Amino acid sequence: MKIFELHDPLFLPHCGCELQFFLDLGSSIVLIGENGIGKSTLLRHLYSALEMELRTVVEQKSSDYFFDRKLITLKNFFLEGDLPHFNIKNFLALWNDFELDKKEQRLISHLSGGETQALKLCLALCKDCTFYFLDEPSQFLDTQRKKTLCLFLEKLRLSGKSLIVIEHNIDWLPSGWNVNQLVVENNILKRGAEWII
Amino acid sequence: MDYLIIRLASSFFVGVLLSQAGSLIQLGTRNILASPSTLGIDGLSVLWLLIFHSASIYFNISYSSEWTFLIGLPVFIFMGLMFPRFFQGKSKFERIILLGLTFNLLVGAVFSLWQFLFMAFNLPFPVELWFGHFRFSSMSSLGMLIITELCLLLGLKFFFKDLKMFSIGPIMGLNWGLNEKKLFQFIFVAVAVSTLIVINLFGAFSFLGLVFPILARKMWFQKLDLGGELFLGPIFNGLCLMAIDFLCYFNPVLGAEVPVGLIVTGIGAVSLILILWTGHKDSEIVAKPKK
Image (tube, rainbow over all chains, first blue to last red; front, top):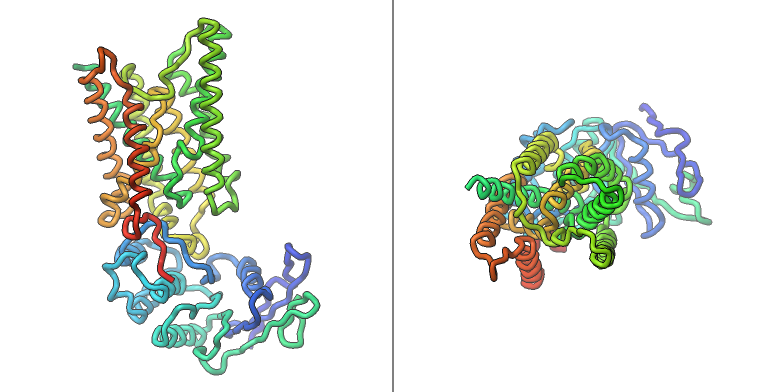
């Protein structure tokens, strides 16, 4: 199995620390840990080290939709927008599996929290790239949508993509994924017993 | 008759420019309270004109308003290019809007003081600058407005896809290669130049850049998306301003024409109060998903 090494060592400018994080291509890593230990910051540092065409990111914070438009308008923009690395098959599959096709005439402001999260996932995961960074992707999702997401992520992993996911509840994730417990000891972030910075 | 056509065409293009400038700045800042007035660009333009006017009196040079615009153009383009650097990393524009409003108040105070001093020394002062009007519309000023509008339309055509991507939300900048810096530069240059030309040639029309985009968005956005707000809406808003100017022209009060800027500032302020006061979930412009 090929070991892919992110910039070695990666420099964390905010604390003057160096970070080493090894990631196999086609692997999936789940980071778990208590609130406030720096999981999202770690994820941000990891994806910032990669070029945009290599990765896609789903951030935890809600996406701000300034304009209250119908879902169909967003869908049409993506289908006709000629976006780089846009995977139309994945987009339509996610759109339909998340049942957004049934809500196409609705305004964004009228969507529920779970539907908004599904929309956010759909707009990010339709990008064809090597690395997928997901910060708590299952938040607000119901059981059915979690199942859909699980199947989609597993399909991505099997097709050779690398996934790094932050989660608190790992019950919905596919079995066999590499789950890493992150802890902070003496202000140092560790993965299991091994220091990563 | 020729004068009236030129004047009405000028008011139409001013309405179009202010509507598009307001839409761009509200889109760029993702804030419905952002406008050339509330961000202090109006104040900067008035200050520029006051400095130019004072310098021309001091050096005893006569000038036309077209020249103040042409000389101010590179200054305002430079400022437009620098604005994004100033705002870098600031996703919350509330503080900047507050700064802009405070700056406008400061310019208002400077304006009054300047006016007092000029009148004390019996020097000419552009008192009508604060409330715009189209009394001195000319073919050359109309020509400059049309050229500015054409440049803006070209820019909008060039950046339309980027504007659409930006309007979807931060996810597009994060994942889809949107060059936000370049887009911001276009937005701020377009807004700075549009504001400068309007204030320079006709004076200030406060609140129009704030209320016009909201009107355009409410009427056409859900059907025609950004195209409705940036193209169809401004045409309607331009016609509205033209109609108000038409009424002002044909209905003088005690023999004097009421400045259209005064009327639209009043209407704009009251409309904004009503929009913000009666605004409930469905009329909220910012789409806040339920949690």
